[in-house]
Length: 179
Image 1 (cartoon, rainbow, N blue to C red):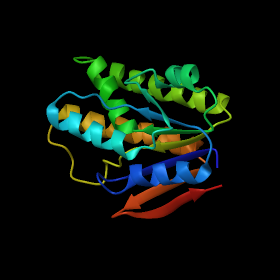
Image 2: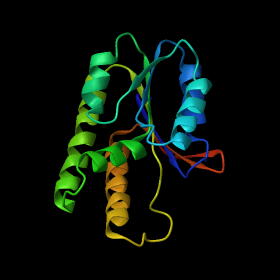
Image 3: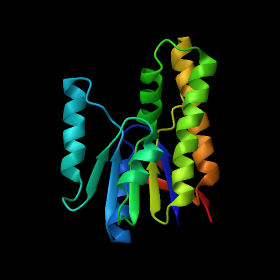
């Protein structure tokens, strides 16, 4: 499999599965982290994630323009983990704070299209982690609904290109697509 998309709810085991898959694949790994430590709680989460990764893996911390950043840093990596698209889309929202819905949609599409170009040009295996946020209640405010919708669109764009899509439910991987 060249591209695996792992989706599911919060704390469902997505990151753990991505890391297991990369370990089993062997070879050099590039771990792409999209989180920004905006507060103390997020700093603790990021540090816990860092401690769970093998020391030999290369880490790239990038908030947007992810495709370009991966291309520049890929080196000899045979597997790339992107963790996660959920925060990547949030970062695009923050970068375009105050923008209208059409501008945000174009920015998210451009970000994901840049990542897709990177996937298509690289010989590495990609394991992409994202959250499925569209299964719950309809958010109460316009910005939250737009975020949910655009993350859903980003996930759909990536799932179309993926060879394999896995839904994590309570720590159990459910195969949705496999080529």
